[in-house]
Image (cartoon, rainbow, N blue to C red):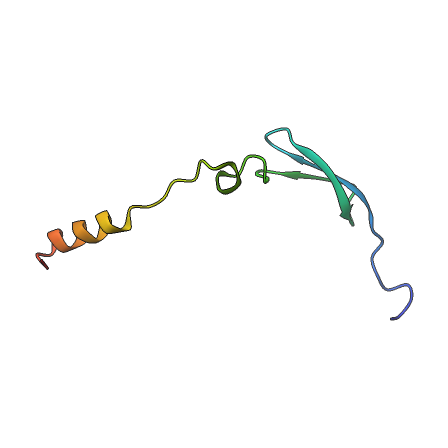
Length: 66
């Protein structure tokens, strides 16, 4: 590897809009996020599942494809 061409890594404090903070390494010293693993619906279990069968039935009913 060539010397003096790689970016310097510093400890970065990441802050989410929900208030969760954690430390990682990055080129920046601070970052702010809109959503993190503590407030994302997929990780919290509040994810809504789309009723695909209901949408298909509605489409078939609309275009008389029964």
